[in-house]
Image (cartoon, rainbow, N blue to C red; front, side):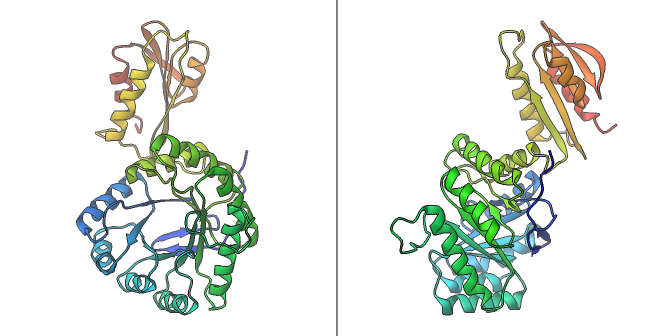
Length: 357
C-alpha cells in the first residue's frame, strides 16, 4: 500500500521544512517553566537525542519570553513559542528568537492585536501556527453546532482575517480531546485549505490511554495522507511522547530511524520460554543505548514457537525462534546457531553490536 500525501504548502520552521513531500516532523513540548532555562535546555537536548524535530515552549510571562534567547543559543531544535491571552508576549517571543509562534484563536482574537503580531512575524520571516483546541474554541453562535463545526469554522474565520493582512506563512492544528472529533475536523480542514497540518489529540491522559487514542486518530489521518507534523500529547515525560510518535510513523513506513525495531509474538500455550522477560530486557538495553547504536534501521524478531517463529526470524536482520529451552538464531535471513534461553538476551545484544559489520 502506498500512502499518497496531501499536497500542502511548504513552511520553514528554523532549519526544518514541513509540508509538501518533506518527512512528517515529530514535535513535543518542554514540560518545565520556560524561564528555568537550564532545565529547558536539558529537556530539549534529551528530546533531540530521542528523535524530536521541533519543540514548543509555554510563554506565559515576560520572563519566559526573554529566556528564549538563552535557550536558543544552547539548542539545535527549532523553538515554537506557545502564546495565550497576551499578544505582547508573542511580539516579545519573536524579538527573542522564536522560530514560530502559536496563537490560540480562542483567546487572542482582537483584530488590532493580531495585526501587530503579524507585522512582527513578517519582519522576522517566521511562521504562525493557528492552533485550536476543543477546550478553548470560540462558540460559533449556533447552539446545535458540533465541536467539529466549531473548530473548523473558527479556524477558517481566523485564517481569512490573517490572509487579509497578506500573510500566508501558516500552519494549522485543530485538536479535540477525542478521536472522532479530531479525525473529522482534520478531514474537513484538509479540504478547505492548503496549509500544512500539525496533528494531535489534546488532553489524552496517561501514557496507556493517550498512546492508544493518538495512534488511532493519527494513524487514520496519516493513512489518508493528511498531516505534516505530529505530537502525541501524554501526561508523561516529553521523551515518551517522541518515542510514541516515532513508533506510529515507523509502523506506517513513514519514518525509518536508525536503531532497532523489535518484532515479538504475543505468546500462547505453545510458547515454552519466558519470552516477556527477554523482550523487556532487550527494550531496556536498547533504550539505554549503551554500546548498541546503529547508523541504520534494523529489525529484531523474538519469537516463541515454531509456527511463525522461523519465518519472522528469517525476515528480520536478527531473529530467534524458540522451541523448548533453546532457540535457533538467524542472522540476515540465514540460520546461524542454536542458543539457550538463559543466554538469549546476551547473544542478541552481541549480534546487535555487530549489525553494521
